[in-house]
Image 1 (cartoon, rainbow, N blue to C red):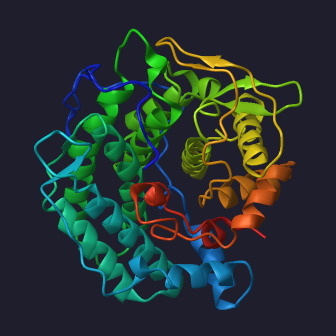
Image 2: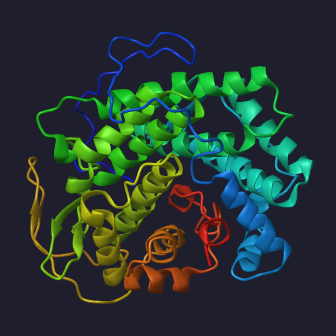
Length: 404
């Protein structure tokens, strides 16, 4: 399990109440006007648009590589099968509270299945996979009332929030999902996930840098994704604003906190371990892609700052030497050398970054290209270990993000 706090739990996090779709939100909800228009969202419009599914369907149908290999990887994953049965719970616990057993594996396994079967429906056209995905999401929206445990519950709210929203955003285009069931799912995403997301991101603490970048990033992803799913521009803008100007380490200038003279951008967790740095690339890449689907270029923000960070992380994890600027934060963490812990960590995150910068934008990303080639074809949840770290990304990027 990769996501951990920089200091022990104990700093309080204020929970705020936010109303659901179609109702007036609390006065505490952040209201920002970042764009000069209030255009409707693109649907489906998170990690994948309809044009992306058209590309996947065409290339898989023709047996063209690398899509064919990516499709085979998806079909061979047990989460994509019709025999999968949901295992919903009233409360999901992540992090020990000393009373309840942790059960968050039920949630991340079911989300992996909801997403995988949604992909199989969109690409194959077989409605039995659509029905399976909806069965899973309906099971959870009819039961889940809260996330609990210790501070790690915020990780569950972030990671599983953005992932569940992505599965639902795909399935909203299926006519067989009853409108009432879809609205109930939206309510769950707002009432269970967003309330925790918003409280975490708007926290006010003496030291905002004591949470590593991954904490903010997964929460930012969840808020942005729920904003699109619920057609709520305020939520979407809240996440975009934090990416640009946030006080925590998930904001772009803090996550890629130093640009070396050779153009590589040092990642905030590089002195910690490489499992977390590669996770951070996956989370920020996901954020940028979801925003891109809605017409906002976070990939290119601040002179392609994310690309510089991704190239740094890829280079070191491929065995190259990289410069390191000593890192310290406001709670006494001091890191004088880059960490070799988990060096070479493999996650399904590189196809997304590589395909955007190289095949979509025509920019050089040699290290990301090398890592994408090494990992190809990317798998999904369950292909990278049985524990939660293997489910931190939705995966299948070779199938879903390859552009040529």
